[in-house]
Amino acid sequence: MTQRPIEAFERHLSYDFKLRLGLSLDGNFWMVGQTSLNGVENPLTRQRNSRIGATGPVPLTKHQAIKSRFSDGAYTANGGNYKNLSVSWQYSWIGWPKAAL
Image (cartoon, rainbow, N blue to C red; front, top):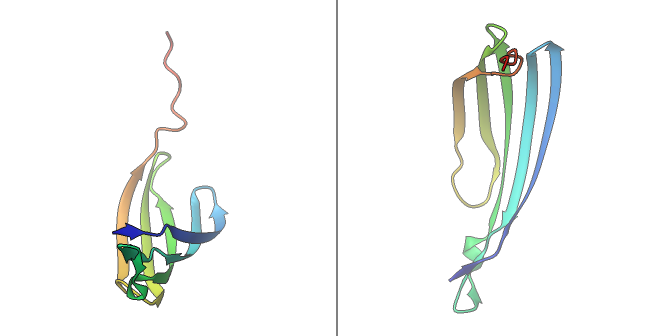
């Protein structure tokens, strides 16, 4: 059994309202991934799907933020068509002073 490579295209459009506060609109499209068994391709396994979504961080402190994401299946020819919502806590070490040696 073999599988052809999956080709993907992805785009992000983001806007910063102010430092560390913004919004990103995201979209992707992927296709192919068709499988074959003993050299015979199975057209029912061809994948052609896309998703759209948005991501937005809300700063809490200089180093911390709460990030929320939502995505939905925009076009689903094969596979799971689902909605996804996630909320995460983000911590960044960027900006810490360097230790004196």
